[in-house]
Image 1 (cartoon, helix red, strand yellow):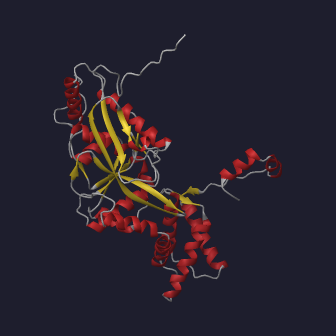
Image 2 (tube, rainbow, N blue to C red; image 1 turned 60 degrees about the vertical axis):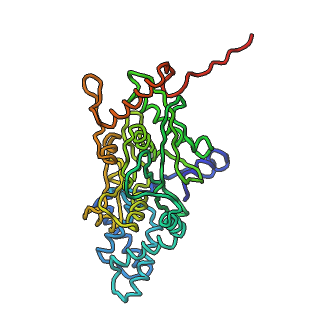
Length: 388
């Protein structure tokens, strides 16, 4: 047994491998969470305890194991089939049960085993958290700022993954360079991230340049990011920062954002949503929750939520919030408290709305440079003439 990628590589590059391994069986790493599979989980735990002479689990402890399986599968409607990982928790929960001289493994023993497993792998996460707390990494969790927003990143260290907030800033000004991705200019941007930036050009052109050229210059960057940026899960956050800068409307710094965006302004699902929410929550909780903080996620990621009990209780008490959005306009209104605005029958945005303010800014720039007839989102391409 092994990872599929190794099978495909060996199959492609080793002729003998094809002859020796003629029958292949694919095993999925997850399965649907149904009444039957939950019962199968309970049977599996019981059989392990019986074969290894371990103490058996109460039904509450089994329920925690089932939720842990869904967390590993990153979907509340699925369960992981990585049973070796589950067995690690079964063994460790038994040790905590023995320390308490309990007859059966209780739910708190399973929770303790999960927490301790995470703690043993969290040294790097703790260092980053410390850097944020002492302001070595600059992250705002209160107040308002123009052109600044908290994006969310996921780090994978061995079998431990965790999220952390990262400041994204945008500056806009008159010009014809379009959006300059600072990470790309410094060769710190991956292909997927670069594609996400180019998608923003399409959105801005479709939104604001149907009746006029859209010649502007803008710079985008992940502040204090020195190891490169990959993925498009922050593209919606980057777009919010750009629009905030153009409209000169401040963004609530107590809200972090994850989610990619397409050229139509629709928010698309991303991975690692639980880790991202927990990473931002930790920062807010250590500084003190004020009831206005939270995270904006794609609506499609709602089924992926398998959060810790502390966050669930904070959300129930309205000390922390999780908003699920479908498009950029919904996110803008949450972040700014101002109507995004939709065009009327005359093609005009409501006065005072965010899109109105952006539209007015662009018109102002066009009036400032009356001969601005360059192509949309960039200067006219230079044509090289061949010599004959």
